[in-house]
Image 1: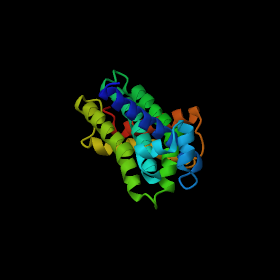
Image 2: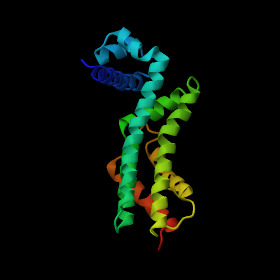
Image 3: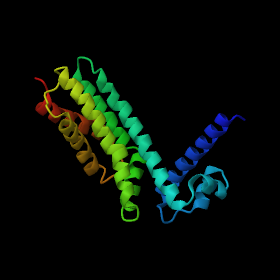
Image 4: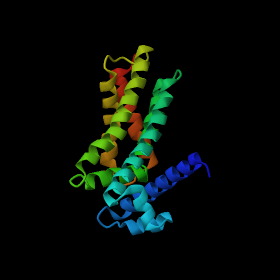
Length: 209
């Protein structure tokens, strides 16, 4: 085995442990989860977990941040579709908004919010890190796409960052309410309704005509 292959295998094993750890933490909560349970579900020896992640606190932090990065990657890929929206901006915006809501409604995203809120007192710095990797990155990416649309004359705004913030608020506030702060799965039809209403309101304020 070459050095590069060995390193790749170590990274893959670490990621596999983090994925399992997040699932277990989400299911049982931080306090009730033990490292042995994570090792068993990951199919590795307990010392292997410690070799990769040192201790339970480190394991929790990295598992949560890995989940945050995965959620962010999905949302960033969705916002990229606004680079070339074509002639029907309203439809594309509504489709993008709907898909962003769907990512926010996934079991992983809901668990990420729940775990972050539940451990706010014990891991206060983790909340900032999660928000930076998710909400902030999404807002920045969306602001960039909206700025491009404004330059092309498809939107009317001198502050794309504010426009992005308001569009996200129009999406996330109703989702939080209908999902009861992430404790209820929102039906597909309601997700589309939220997306359509948000885009309609957004374009009434920022549409070019």
